[in-house]
Length: 161
Image 1 (cartoon, rainbow, N blue to C red):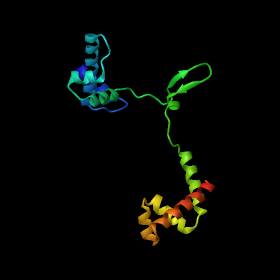
Image 2 (cartoon, rainbow, N blue to C red; image 1 turned 90 degrees about the horizontal axis):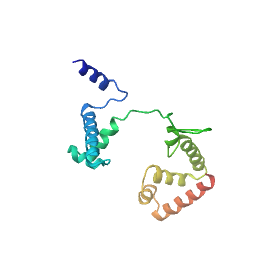
Image 3 (cartoon, helix red, strand yellow; image 1 turned 120 degrees about the vertical axis):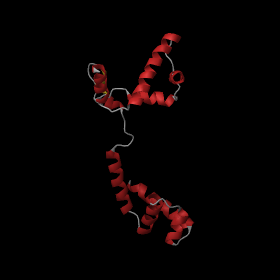
Image 4 (cartoon, one colour; image 1 turned 135 degrees about the vertical axis):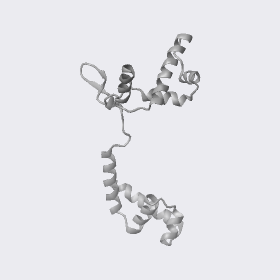
């Protein structure tokens, strides 16, 4: 009973809550990995572990990932005499908020430089997601005119961005 209570405490008081079935799958996968390593004298693939357990490969990967301990973004990865490289340095954001903010300002300023008709066409095309034909019908001009005005407006805006 005491051992059961200790296990329950350790299971329920982790930093990240993982379901019991997922945790059981992970532990079975670890046991199967050990058995296959001893049996074949080599590291088994995820597919071999999944076949041994009779589950999908994705379930094994998901279960093993779920039992990993969380680490801090400020955990050092590499350290030499002058510099330390942290996990945070390895995680990248494709588009930082500063870049988006600057692009929005530049776009607003460029939109001020074009006439109202061009502005309306660009708003309908790029912000409302309409086709040139839909814009033409809405404004009451031909599709060719919409195309020409759109091209001219974008050309003018590029000068200011």
